[in-house]
Length: 464
View 1: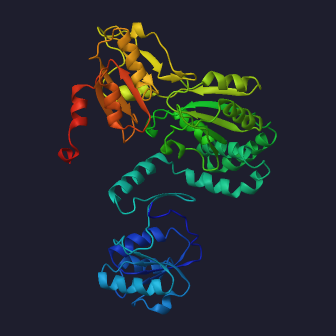
View 2: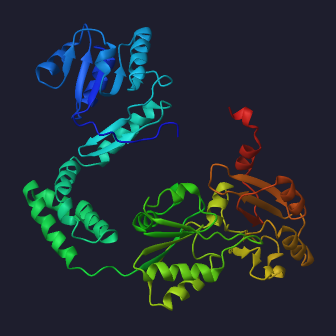
View 3: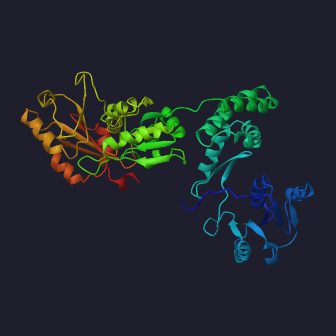
């Protein structure tokens, strides 16, 4: 991120702009939405600028900018559409300590003006750091359609009510009140007429003042395989409401970004045959925070019900009479098999599929190897990289065909996904050569579909 987004206080601040043409008009249409003191320097201003001056929206100076004009200014826009003149005026502004924006010159600008969705006082700013203005406009258009025009009046009424709402305790009590106002009570009242909103808000506040505080609760949430777009709507809602998020090592940073900024984030990552947070400590954290009244999200990679030691954690919160619920997620096997263009079951091949783990609490996990070694069996092996040689040995010992296809998918669903297609005979060697460092799932009995395999084998330069 080269440009840090902030919202500047512009009320009664001095903002200067040099220029009187199309570039100046585009900036002024936006700047006039503020309550800033606007000064325009243009010997030959467009008619619209003259009209805006007559309407008292800005002050027009029919001359060039001088250094003295910059005293006390907050921002300066160079919009003369003349490189030399813009550079000269920008130098004057910088010398005066004023932040500079040169229209259509990202490199020499100290700040940029984003695309804006205006639902005053709600403002959504969209920036692409100059990389994709068309994309910014598309996002703006999409948000304009999604955000109702009543959002602004609702926010203004809510803003005037904030001091009364301070009677509620800080934290969740206030968040619950405002959430109900903006997403339920407020819109319903606005549909009946603007005058009904404030009385409805007073009634809502009284309801919340007499309501008992919510008990602590734990949501066991499946975070999916890593792609934030594969996170369920219910999972996103849980993250948005969480006071505490206790998350696993394999949860992607993009998903963690979806949690509330104020939420307490606790990393309890576990690694097979490596450093781990003791399960007893995780259980204790769940109980401690839920008993304090927090809404806790226990965020697990993939689906919380698959190799996630979920029962132990449920038993721990149950023992303290703490409420909980499960939000299922997309398990790694579903994402990985989609990544190789296959299905987990296929008529005439296999009517069932096994989900196995490569290791358990005691070391390498044992399974019904004799059944798995039969032809056309399919298994999804979780946490199987370090147990590859053990799995190979057990299967060969029970008569498995050495040519049985095996596919290892690293970082399934993510941008850096990698696919290794091999055989049972070559699995340990090829896996070692691949030097996979990310989370990987192994499919025994499945090879990538031909078209998918060809795409992975095509050199990047040929795809350019």
